[in-house]
Length: 130
Image (tube, rainbow, N blue to C red):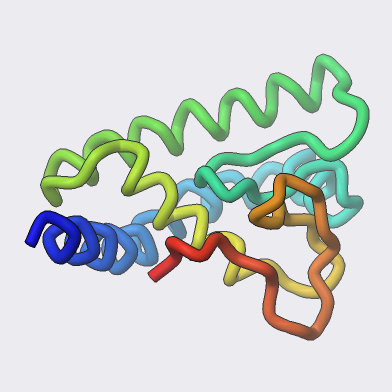
């Protein structure tokens, strides 16, 4: 019973994450630095729902990623509470959705922690993804 409730919470969180995860990236995409870092493969989507730096971090890149991740965490915390899910469950679901939305050439984190470049094939996603 507990596992069914957990799966339901993850499923519900994934549905809500699909809607709300768009908000923060949409705001970030207005920032030319974000768009440039994403298209050049300097940053990518992590399995935990946050952005990560691929390779060497510059102070400017670190500030950009930190700013976006702080905003994501605030959204995740609010939505997790509204949906009776934990922050981690909600962030994981958002990460599943963000990785699924990557396009060819963008970086994402595979379940083993390695950085992958998205191809035309579906991305490798965490087995807990709904």
